[in-house]
Amino acid sequence: MKKTWLLSLSLATLTVIAACGDNNETNEGNNEGMNNGGLNNQEEEPEGNNEAALEGGETAEQPEMPEPDLEGVPDVVAEVNGEEIPKDEFEATYTGQFEQATMQSQMTGEEVNQDELKQLVADNMVSTELLVQEANNQGYDASEEEINETLDEIAVQNGLESADEFMAALQEQGMDEEEIMSQVELQVKVDQLIASESGDMEPTEEELEQAYEQMEQQQEQMGGDEEMPSFDEIRPELEQQVRQQKEGEASQMLIDDLREDADVTIHL
Image (cartoon, rainbow, N blue to C red; front, side, top):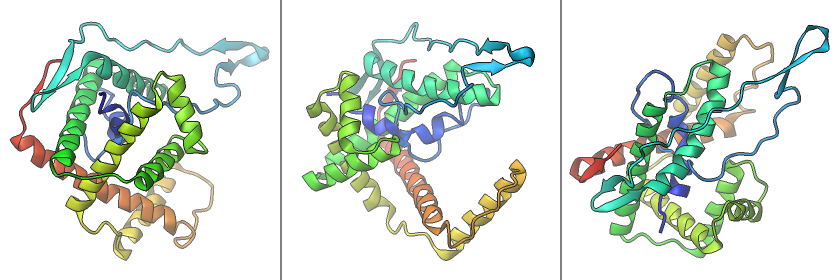
C-alpha cells in the first residue's frame, strides 16, 4: 500500500518550493504538507500567459517546460525502520513537486536544482513515513466522520469545490476509491498524533498582532497601492495562518524526535 502520496501533499508542499533554488536549506514545518506526487492544482492560466505580446502585435511563445530528471533513481529510494519507500512512489511525488518548483522558478528566474529537490522530497517522504509509523504504533483510530471531514478539507486546499470532485480528479490519475480513503485515514491518524503532541494551538492576541504587522511590512516591501484590510477584517485569516505555523513547528519537533531513534537510510 502506498502510504506517503496524500500525506506528502500536506506535509511537504510548504517547504519544497522555497528550497529548490541554489540554497540548500533544511525543511521547516509540515508539510505537508504534504502534497507531492498527487493532485496538482489545475488553475486556469491568465490570458497571455502562453504568449508574450511584442511591439507590432507579434507574439512569442514561452520557453518549453523542462522535464524532471528521474535517471538513476534506485528501486528503493529510502528505508525507514525496515519499511521501504519504492522508486515508483518517489517518482510520482517528485514529479508533482518538480512541476510546482518549475512554475515558481519561472517567476523568480532561478533554475530548479534537481539534485537538491530530490534530496528534499526524499527527506519529506521519510518524515511522513515516521509520522505514519508513530501514529500506528500509538493506536490512533479514524472515524468515518473524521475521514469525510478531512477529505473535504483537502479538496478545498487543492482548489476544488467538493470531496466528490477531488475523488474524481484522483481517479482520473489512476487511483481507486479504496486507496484514496485508506490514505485519508492515515492523514487523520497523523493529524491526531500531531494534535496530541502539540497541545494548545490556539493563537494568542500577541501572535495575531505580530502576524498582522508582518503582513503590513510585506505589503510595504511589495510596494502595493491597495489599502491594507483592518486587523478585524482579516482576523480569521490571521488565526488560520498562526495556527498552521504552530502546527508546523510542532510537527517538525516531533519528526526531529522520531529521527533520533529511527533507522533511516536514503539511497539517492
